[in-house]
Image (tube, rainbow, N blue to C red; front, side):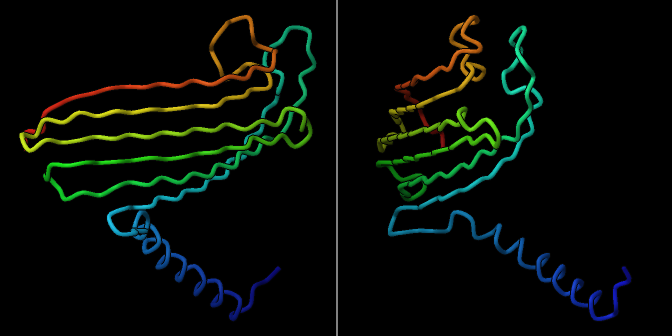
Length: 171
């Protein structure tokens, strides 16, 4: 197939516009602000080929499949004046459905919620609290390392981590 002059020129213009547009869109990330809050939405699509969806189970067939992961997340951050004492706050939620093309009975969803609050005193001493909640499901026990002998068994569960921290800002 031979491309004509107009086709080559059209593609050159499209590529040039994309090259100019992409850096501008990268600079715009994280610039959604509502008052003192910053909103950070994200989306990601991942496709993976697995030549053995049942992992390394002995005697099992080795069926292959294409796995799609669609991740959506939103985070909110409270912005305070830099180096000023006061409250800082961050919270976020992420959901990721994992979809198998052929073995759709293996489909599952991962979810994560995280919240962090930090208070800085005028003396630059700060204390922080952070809570992270993960709701996990895995069709064949390959992503959770809770027990060595649970591989091949559909596992579900959640993890909730709470942390307290303190420190001093030298600035």
